[in-house]
Image (cartoon, rainbow, N blue to C red; front, side):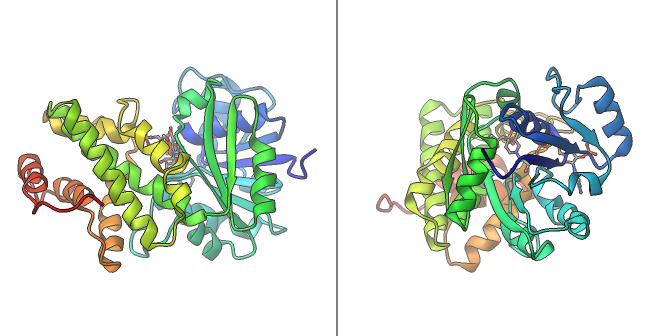
Length: 326
Ligand SMILES: NC(=O)C1=CN([C@@H]2O[C@H](COP(=O)(O)OP(=O)(O)OC[C@H]3O[C@@H](n4cnc5c(N)ncnc54)[C@H](OP(=O)(O)O)[C@@H]3O)[C@@H](O)[C@H]2O)C=CC1
Ligand SMILES: O=C(CO)COP(=O)(O)O
């Protein structure tokens, strides 16, 4: 029996909707909050969210545009885009009557501040207990009940375990951790690296290049992670290597799909959130502040900002001085 009986999900996009389904399957009483009251009412009535088409929301899930109602839950999941997480928690904070766990479910780093998601939560809701959920998990797979495993980290191991108990089910398997930073770095960096691999695939550079870029991308993720105090088992775990493998190998990923379109010289898919686009510049700034080199991520940032062509970036990566593998 978990003490965390009720769950509210803030942000009714693809991921928020999938997570509401996860929590309902785990037996929690669930509220899904959408910022647009009209959207909330439409989803509540139709039981279908256009952001996650084809998934029928269980009748027990309460869909609302009323934040005060959502804020009464025993635990909250924030599933907005990373750059909007602070705004969402700022709005939520005045409604919180007790120090509840707030789980960041977005993958990214805040522009301007270089803060990770749980740091933003700690600032915006100082009495809350921040946690992070991340790992290889496409919203569509998760919502359809396909088997998924993720990492769920909180500073306090007992809290991480309680959150796992509250959300876990036979189709959704969270592993608990106390390495918040390690989990956050994996989720943020893999989106940038998936754009790189998508570009290579779109450019028809071959399966060998795809494997090389994914592997050297993992070296970047690991280098930055170590510098910021992440544990190696987290970096090689579900939220690090696991999510990198998923995102760098599947056109189902919006980040990979963005890269694919760029590599083919096509227009990127319209209206699809690719967090790596927003994370790339801030990841580079963060790495520079730590004197860490991230050549693949730097190439992605340069291509996205128009500072480099794709061909120049590929040539630049391949003609770097030879070095030891590390
Ligand atoms: N989709 C996936 O498979 C997964 C996504 N994630 C992560 O989850 C996060 C959200 O992604 P996803 O759900 O896919 O994105 P979507 O584009 O599907 O949805 C984003 C949602 O956030 C809402 N939103 C935007 N700004 C705010 C705000 N200020 N306050 C409240 N709600 C807001 C949007 O509302 P509106 O509809 O009104 O625009 C929209 O419903 C990203 O960081 C992503 O990396 C993580 C794992 C899997
Ligand atoms: O984070 C995800 C899978 O773990 C979703 O990937 P995309 O955001 O690239 O679609």
